[in-house]
Image 1 (tube, one colour):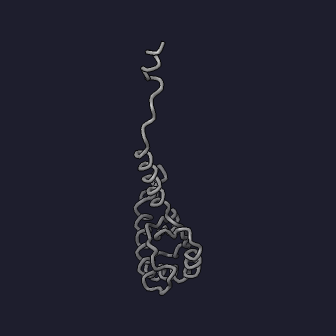
Image 2 (cartoon, helix red, strand yellow):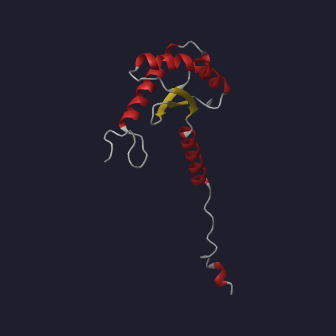
Image 3 (tube, helix red, strand yellow):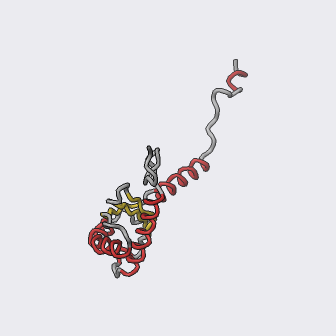
Amino acid sequence: MARRGSRHNSRGQVGARTAKAGELIRRIIASELELIEDERLHLVSLTGVEVDRDLHTAVVYFTTFDRDDDPEIDEAFDEYRGSLRHAVSQQTSLRRAPELEFRPDITLRSAERIEQLLTQEADRPPVPDLENDNDGEAAE
């Protein structure tokens, strides 16, 4: 008999419970970041949170303006990880606050790079089709 209320469906996708927990954690951390007076985190925007099945770990994805790989941002998140986790603990009804991991969200940069490549490709002159070139046949 299948368990009802499973956190993941048969394909291993995140269920409604973990998605709700992730969104709640994202909102809590975003509001806490607004209260932190640290220049390193001023232009940080949270793009999402993925919570694992057992709610033990939450991966917080962020983006900034051209500074996603900045080690200073990583240092700031390391410095505030405990207080952010404490805020999550205080503001949720979770039995235990998940461990927080902070990772840059590369989807926006990837999309920008794809857009740049497509634009470059569209600006290139067309390559002549040598197989269907009729000039070569006329010379024989």
